[in-house]
Length: 80
Image 1 (tube, rainbow, N blue to C red):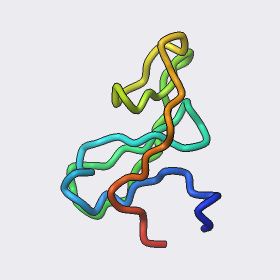
Image 2: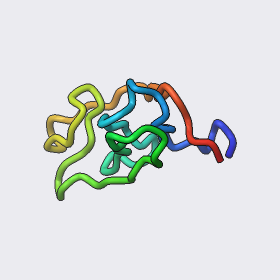
Image 3: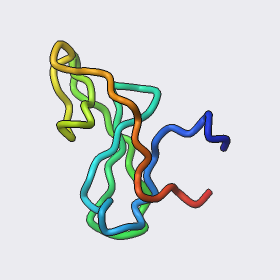
Image 4: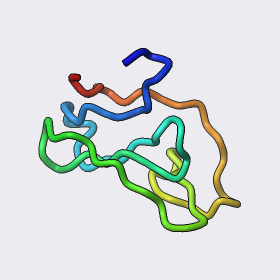
């Protein structure tokens, strides 16, 4: 996968990623969720209808409260 195609999926390998969510780079209605267990693949989740994932709040918010932010790479990426 090229850097240009990277979608923001975290590797969920560092302690800083456990139980955290991360924005999907190309779909504001989606986000990645790491489990409590280290090295388990991130799960792709979807926000409820009329909500978008806001990385600064680390949760889904009403579309009118959402603001675009520059994507930030997670601490680790998946091994593929």
